[in-house]
Image (cartoon, rainbow over all chains, first blue to last red):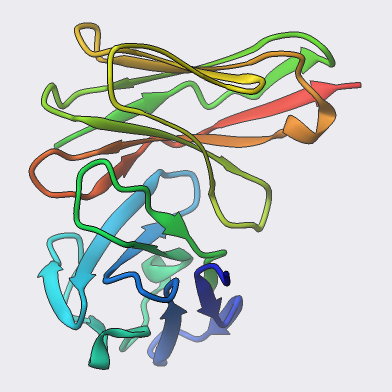
Length: 115
Length: 111
């Protein structure tokens, strides 16, 4: 069974540009999460989809970030316009059921560097 | 603000020794606790999950949970060089189903 995949693995862009990150969850997983790790800090929650619906987007930093999950399969996270402080590793995770005991399976992350 | 604290290390142990990784959390109602291992540039990989007070063993790994002290630990017996990685403690928020992570502990097992 394929794990969570993310694309691209790395992205280097200039301040003011737009970047779109993609996540493909494990097949059959209704729950999809985005997290971000800024250098030297802990991994922090951004948002949670249940199928195509945003269940919780309390971690989104500001309105420059837009996440979508059309059709309830893969998800995209767009940053527009990118700022220097957006640099970090963006992780996607998925789980099958919305239970507190449910393990979340993580993708390898997208390393974003904004210059 | 829910917090998860880990000693960032680096922690170095000789091959064959026991590595002890510790984690404390601030939210008393947290129910689920996870240890992930992350090699550089790779996905965080689940090592152990624990939900009840006490010890849970899986091979060379033992997770220990003490909800009264808000403390969870991971013991690695007979440490191997391949165990060298960053270990992330994650706590699932009871009310919001988010994972709250510590900053991770870097472990090096010296051959």
